[in-house]
Length: 254
Image (cartoon, rainbow, N blue to C red; front, top):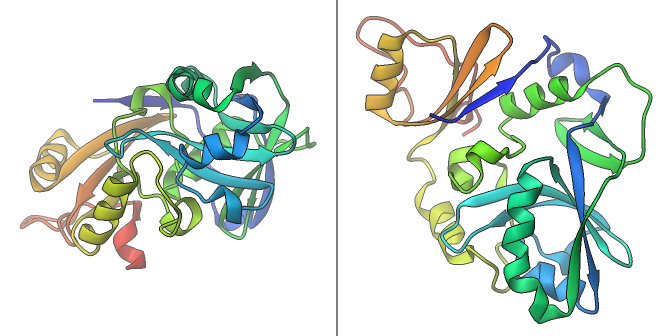
């Protein structure tokens, strides 16, 4: 089972209605050349023609599996902000196609900071004085179903399994891009069936029960606790003996 080892604090979403975070675990891929927009339009789930100069998106493969989420900053070139480590996976993936657009790709070491505001996450270039660290950012993203993809889960799951808010990440009106047909089909077929649910420190007995009832995705070690993400039908956590209480569930918002 993929395990994300994260040292996270006890900050809550309520205490962070607007806060900033140091991001030392992000890096950038710079795309430059004659047809940057054309190249990215065929790779990302967002519509670059309808996007502001800074936006978030997903890179997927042809089968609809998420390579990584990303924050893109447009200028004369395009900076793709992703987690360190997964940037190597994305770089090798994009190199297969970039030569056809007379573009180049280069890893850039840039300073960045995160913003959490009104339930939304943003990544900015530059630095910001704050005591909030990367690990606090990571915890918030996990419990809000907006996880930053790591190497161990890249190309393992589709958008519905990870729980991303598709309104923030996917355009269903744009032309062809990698994984488009699969993502559109999943979005249509998966509504109301099974959704992501997160549990904390469950027993082996409860883990086996939930695994039988649905699909185990990954676990994240957070300080002394382990958080588990499953795909489950509504009410699957209610057993004959007790209720396995989730700490986050997309069923709450349906």
